[in-house]
Length: 186
Image (cartoon, rainbow, N blue to C red; front, top):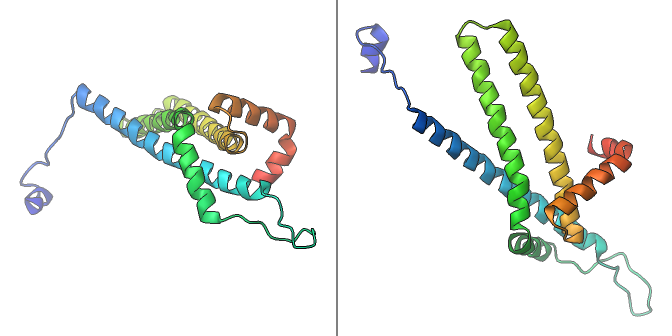
């Protein structure tokens, strides 16, 4: 069959999808991006929780009351505890933060699809410019939301705040310490 199509004896099959199928594909794509963003959020929280646990654990004292340069923290247990706390107490926060990321990724893919269709239709320069600007803005917004989410998850790990409170705290910290944040985060 492939050889017959390649030789030109047969036409390649054309598949068309109904609007319902296209919407189902868009929904499944959103859910897939949402799951990936949720797992990423959980991972970032677990790492932040383990690091915060280590950081806030007091130094050990020897028999004479002097501090030694050791902390009594078991790394794997802190990570498992962070996973438990994240899943039990912060699942809704991760779902909310990851939904914003997933929606922006789907929007970005829709813009990329529109750019592809524009190229296939003859490359209208005005449409290409508008789509490029929209794509750039969506990517910038996705990066910004991801940055705020990451810092919100860190705040949630340290203070056990809700997502909105932690995001507000992270945003105010970025505004207050913008230069230091830019240097530390690249």
